Length: 228
Image (cartoon, rainbow, N blue to C red):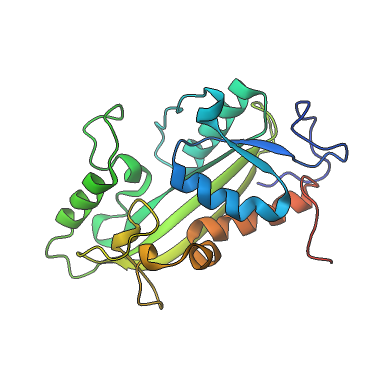
């Protein structure tokens, strides 16, 4: 689903003279995601701008798949700013709950999509739902979508998985969302106990970003910095 060949025309100021991405709007109001993605994109030289600073409201996320929601958010932010848009849709998928919270992760404890979102409420509901469950295996999933314009017919798509399990007691003060309850497979620590550099090496979002950057190099939207 990556964009082969030469990139499409992009708005003035959003690309360099060489046609490389320079300024991109992030279709999210989540400060934690912004920090992580700014750090992950730092080697590319792309300026990542949060949509809220440009007056862009959150887009609806009505779909049952991460991909459809991410694509909708990226197109929404791009349409309202005239910039290339980058969106992720991510969540925690728990085996004992049939993959829930899944695409509803950010709104898991909300009665309606318009209700205020709360990490604490979402975590409390998840732990309650897993009461007595012997299988607590789970994984974080992230899909990233980049569009060069709102109507880009060739969005660049990448994804990543991070396996672990849900623990009843929270551990760690870092990260956000479900991180304090997500015990990372093979690490013996929750995602919230990892320093930023470690999380940005192994997380679902880090894996998706590496995949995305490889695809952006192939599409000639960022420079190849591997020396190959």
